[in-house]
Length: 87
Image (cartoon, rainbow, N blue to C red; front, side, top):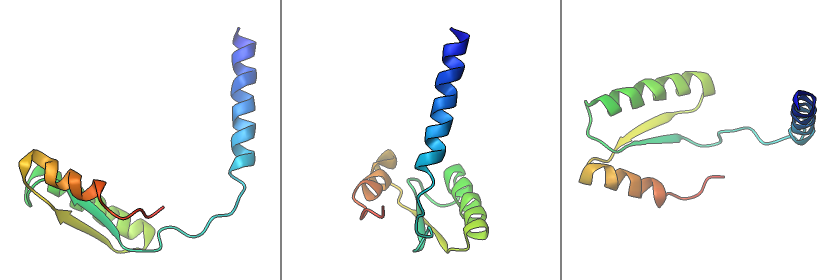
């Protein structure tokens, strides 16, 4: 059983290496938006801004934090759900 599992894991690793060999375009091409479903100054906003600073320095793209408070987070979730697809 252990040998079967190891063989299966090895097959997955080999196939993953084959599938990832295709070249892709540079990402991200546009400004990154982080939607925080709660008001500014709260714990979620602070974490979002720390994450945005880190992403901006690592990716070299501008990162914007948008606060969309209201209805217990439903308004922010709705903005994300209706956002234009970016691939």
